[in-house]
Length: 295
Length: 270
Image (cartoon, rainbow over all chains, first blue to last red; front, top):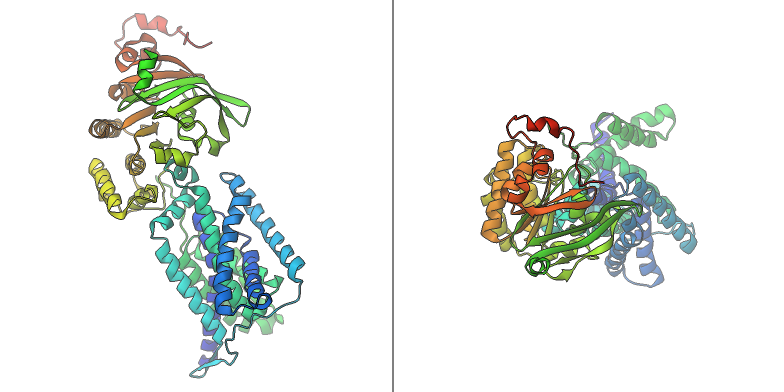
């Protein structure tokens, strides 16, 4: 095994991993503000990509306009989801809300299937498929762009969670009742977190749509995104970034060694193993908050 | 006399009935008045309906699937019976809920920030914070550590400080003395009294620790089984023999009279 090849695997793995992070940031946002894992993030990502396509292809807008506009539409959708579905469940057991998000995911998938059909459409961002040559290492340009977007969002949200609004969202995640008692609008906070997660979904939807085409399979990103979010600690944006890189590298390098042994398909196995082991060994992930027990 | 009391009340709660889940009647016609700038205590045993009374006033009943089925609550002359909890905080009612419930994963400083109204300017917020740190110097020392790791007393101080950031004119506290050492209770109650004196903040205090509560309030209500069974000045309540026996722990000497007290019942029940 030569080092150039190994580092190519690692670098491309890390870039792919950052794309998982891009997706996982959406999960973290909702969890950070409501302590609920949002199983609909896959569906939202897929819808985000479809909305961009609808604006760009069907209405003929240029992409530089379609993408921000889609972000606005999805921001509204996020708020709408809270208003219509989640508000009734505020304060109820988390399991019920979890099931609701799962149902939402299925609903979104079904809706896009009904409206746009199941054929894969291409995003056509215009990023060259010609790989970038870094020394002897080939790097995919779209992966590089996506990783950049992930890092930019990471910085933006780190700053956001230090603002007054961001602190209020974290307070909501800590304790709904105490938040209500000091006049924090829990409903609006949860709505905002869903709206922001929906905007992140547009970013993830555009990048992943460019890579694998826009169809219902986009919503399956949830599995890898959830693994990254859990490994990172579910409520840590930094965790999502670090865990994304770790998972990407393990997956890419590991699959290279394991695939010949098991005859392919070891990527999914590696992801599953990481998810299961994280929950078993370190349930609060790398950077997650743990429940405080004073003695 | 009733009318006169209402004229100067910041809070006037009239024959409030609260239902949980549409079936369980938790309080059955409770009327409570809090005079402007006054300190009032609600006393009574576990499950008597004290906390429910506070939640009816702060609007937090909704979160527990309760609602007011009868009566009205007026705050500063405005009917707030149906108002959203958030709106009531804006009007100046803040409820320090039972069990402290600080935002554990935030620092004390962030706890205060979280409670600040969106409209409060940055400079105003830092003035408010400084004031709160003045009242509770222990919090100032630990302003940047994680709130979940503060001691029980510090968490209670933080919970009160967090409520003060909302700039209430009526502060309601649910069992602030719970699980705290007597010297801490005295410290916290002393600070409450100071804030009440210096800023004219009206206080409604729910306590099982009647002895400590009656030391700082001017009047009290005794609630049992969802009803007000006694109301009077702190002095009158302290000298009432039933209160002494059931809520102040008796202990007034060991003369022979006390022996027959064992057979006494809370006659006002039933």
